[in-house]
Length: 203
Image 1 (cartoon, rainbow, N blue to C red):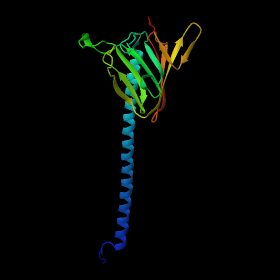
Image 2 (image 1 turned 45 degrees about the vertical axis):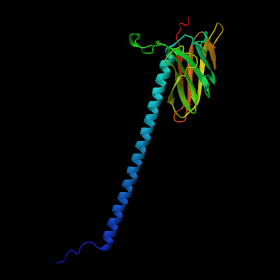
Image 3 (image 1 turned 90 degrees about the vertical axis):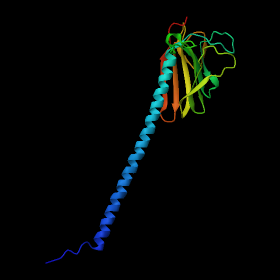
């Protein structure tokens, strides 16, 4: 009758080696899963920021009205300004007045109109705005960062006259253009272009 003498040293070493390999493989899989999850969360946050920025842009542009803003306290007839380096932008800049600013029953000491501009500074798409449509001289606007890692910002304006309809790279006028396009070049999402029709009543 044979007796059980237990495991040999070789068998124990083989078992330890197998367990070690399984542990290393499991750790590698777990590390990969965690890294993928972190990357997904970062990408999801970036996508949320992009969607939020485009929502603001769409709302502002589609609610644009032909209302001029006083410059340094002086009246003028300009209702939209768009050009390279406008509003201290490092690329294109564009400024309008938008309607639809929520002010229920006019209980707040401001209009339902709001001056808004978009510009590029320090690789940031910035929304520049004010609580009052005609500020006092020297009043500083507010700035909100809409997107980070922005490489370029370009606007175009669809101009319609008796002879033709064409896109222009700049615009300054007393009437709104037919349409407006914005092109944002980002590190994460490449080039994003949107086109918006503007209000037809420019009287």
